[in-house]
Length: 618
Image (cartoon, rainbow, N blue to C red; front, side, top):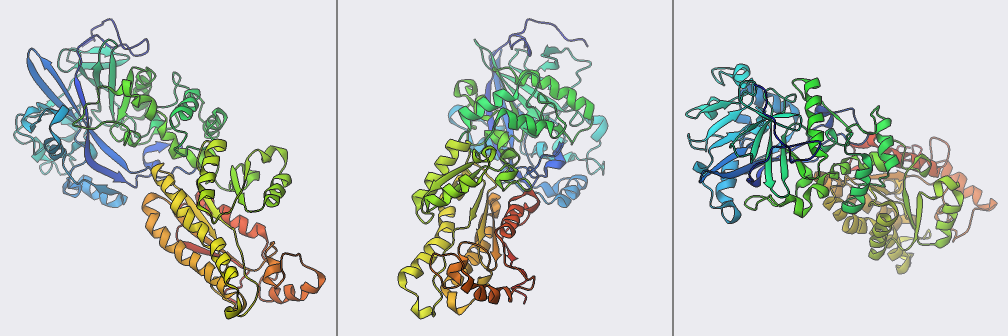
């Protein structure tokens, strides 16, 4: 049927007919999915963004009073508690993906256990209907706990595509036990009176304009969206997107919501989240380098039943997303975690609380590596675009680095003269990085080193021994104490690269305490890699051999002086231990470090790399 026309109140891009207000809750179903590959859901690919963060599964409770009767519906149920008890066509596929799916409670359990307060002592029989935004496993949840009086509402084409349900239909992804004894209501937008909300056909579910079911095809057969009127005078709305998008980058930017607004939002809301040195130019470059227009969303969807239809639906949703009185919330939106109030607290006050502004561009944190250059191939070096904060205990050392850089690169290097074995240095470094780069570093290279003078182990002075461990080991401890918690709270996939020594594998009696300290780095690197892998934080170690560095004279027994001709015999003796026939150069270590910091090494953690010219195997 043709839709009814009406005067819109939602804004010029997304007009909505006038109506009543519904109470609105966001329900944490407790279900999470971890390990989703980005290329499984979005395209074109983006450097450094290969895996989604752990994603939640939200459910939404809508309540209104019509003719004195309180009515309630649930929009989506999240992930079933036992996903591997789903029909074989679903459970068999899930076993091949390697995802980590955790569901401590059913949505029904959450609703009943958390009822009270603003939730109003809810009972399951108070729910008149459950709406599946679509039929995918991570939205079906567990319907069985709800009484037979709770209807199940699905989108167009559901019955033709998926009934009979399993087991009568062996290829159906739907469980017959979810349908037994309850009414299945399939929405038919073609033969039911509808209204227009923006460019989207909608069914006024309660008949009072408080909640609309939206015709949002493309992602899956019968995909439904929802629109809840959360306040009036002025009208505000929550747009329930289901799986219309899986990532904010499928929706933004758009012709109506520019990258300039992203830059402004990051400055206002996300300066402490480690989003990188985000400028309008860096965002535009990220787009154009991938063949995207600057006013085009970062991604297109991959998982669709009709790709072209999915793009059209997203374009219609972008009209709503650009209105400051509409808040778009997808079913697996991890950016709202820790920001919004959850059931049993109502979410009607989202606009007054600023949740839209606080979460709209948070998804850019997934692009940190690409925006900063810190984890892109070859971008560790200043010459290839990295932003570097260098800590040196000696001012001349920082001055020498700064003076050696061409003018176009010196602006990307921030020196800090301080002692890396002091905790305050690391706090100062984070503060300075935020001030200069608007982000915390995503890679730490612990390369400070000190070696005691060659001597029998029992003859090394105590202060020399202490300094070896203060300089060589303590910076790693302080990295873990100060930087790692910052990465965890900001969901930064950080990386620590320790510069060890092949001496830890081939110890020499004359430098035993030095090589012991480097051995401690080996042990710590492996242990820390295991401890923090769950947080997407990697630890690796590079072990160079004796080389042309400022430490080389000291290794040969000299004190703070350069090589002279008399020292060539000592250098030649060391050279003879290296099968490749030359000393290790700083560039050899830098190249390995650059590789480990790059996206190509994203699957490497807890590993040690000998950059030793074959010394270890000789």
